[in-house]
Amino acid sequence: MSPRRLILGTRGSPLALAQSRRFAEELKAAHPGLEVDFQTITTSGDRIQNRFLAEVGGKGLFVKEIEDALSSCGIDLAVHSLKDMPA
Image (cartoon, rainbow, N blue to C red; front, side, top):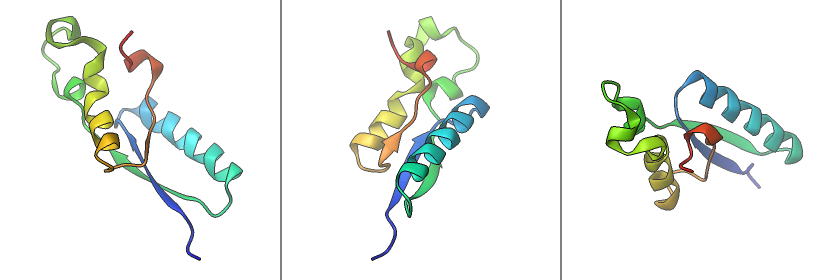
């Protein structure tokens, strides 16, 4: 049987990547043989740099594309920073 491989979606910011790597390490420690690949997803919040977030949709701009990839089965799981989640 081949090892199970999961695709983890995350933003490309240093914080998001560090949190995703940490989560993947813990997941693999709990499930030996598991492989985790990372898919970096650029969000609207990453692209819009010249306006205040409140003007264009707020914090949710940092999660929409990742949630879309999750619901369309483009990724198996997602890691978000709580600071990026809408209240």
